[in-house]
Amino acid sequence: MSGKALHQFLSENLEELKSKGLYRKLPVVTGPTGPRCIINGKEVINLSSNNYLGLANDPRLKEAAIKAIEKYGAGSGAVRTIVGTLDIHEELEEKLAKFKKAEAVIAFQSGFNCNMGTVSALMTKDDAILSDELNHASIIDGCRLSGAKILRYKHSDMDDLRRVIKEAKESNQYKKLMIITDGVFSMDGDIAKLPEIVEIAEEFEAFTYVDDAHASGVLGKNGSGSVSHFGLYGKVDCQIGTLSKALGVVGGYVAGTKELIDWLKLRGRPFLFSTALTPADAAAALKAVEILSESPDLVEKLWENARYFKDKMKGAGFDIGHSETPITPVIVGDEAKCMQFSDELFKEGVFAQGIAFPTVPRGTARVRNMITASHTKDMIDEAVEIYKKVAEKMDIL
Ligand code: PMP
Image (cartoon, rainbow, N blue to C red; front, side):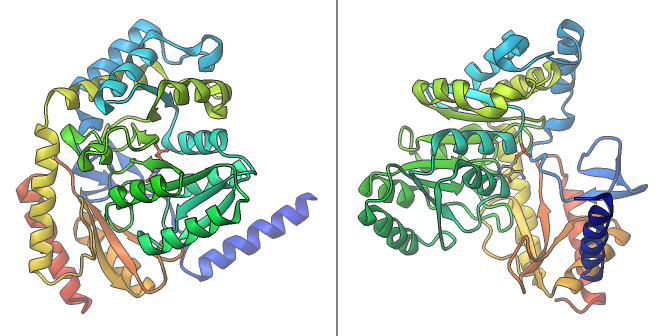
């Protein structure tokens, strides 16, 4: 490809995005991304962060990170398999395994890496993956990379899953079958039907893979995830979590049997070929796991705030979809109107991201709200009042 052809490719595609209103500049945060923060120079109530428990700004995590930098330095210096494994990486994995009540854990540098590396290490072109149609991009990319046949089922539709897996099983074409799902779906805030998924997997001799990115720190005992939420210990083969959302830092992990984790340490390509989590990240994440293991307080506060916000928004007449978690969409429908709604909210002092096609189906554009444990009731009241004011002005309610 000549430089000219590349230029043509880029300019045509960028123009197309601009013409569809999908070209957006990155919002820039000055200072901590707390419940109230400065975005593009304006102080706003932040309803878009995955920092569910406020741990990203917790003094205990900051202190752990600073101490780790002083002890180990800024970087880990190598991939885990060469000389990048620090004692705190192993301590983090041991504490996470205990927290998840799993035999073992392997930590990756991000949740995205974790899905890419894990799915591609477990599945091959001889296998088939049953994948919920609303699964996260990192799951989709991991599935593609594996070369396995991808069979999508309708979102959380257990009859459709059963139909697709039955066909796959009866075809006798595949060596392994895997059912893969988000634990909590990030656009609607609904929870995967894990008990039914596990039952179907047992019936058709498939194994199960759950990505708990939005369930970690949110669902189950002390926020230990969807397996705990449903009491399905030992029934889900592969549990993914991220350290970047409720746990407040960065990184991802897999929890499962010792055999599974051994295999991923030998075949998980991001683990093998990308530099290990920094000392500061590992130490701060370790502190976050310790805090959660010791007390349910932050998780309880998160749910109290989420219920308070949802009740108020529903009471004001907003359509908040069928969310079962702190992720609260406000469905607008029309894409342009939704983006304008988000812009107007920002002008009035609320940062809540507008989300449109192709991230969500056409006609279901929404402003997505993430309530956290660190929002105060006053902030939530203020945000709801701003929502009402802007909605009235834009004729949305
Ligand atoms: N899985 C899901 C379901 C997610 O929502 C995300 C984050 N958007 C990821 C994986 C990726 O996690 P990370 O940000 O840690 O890379």
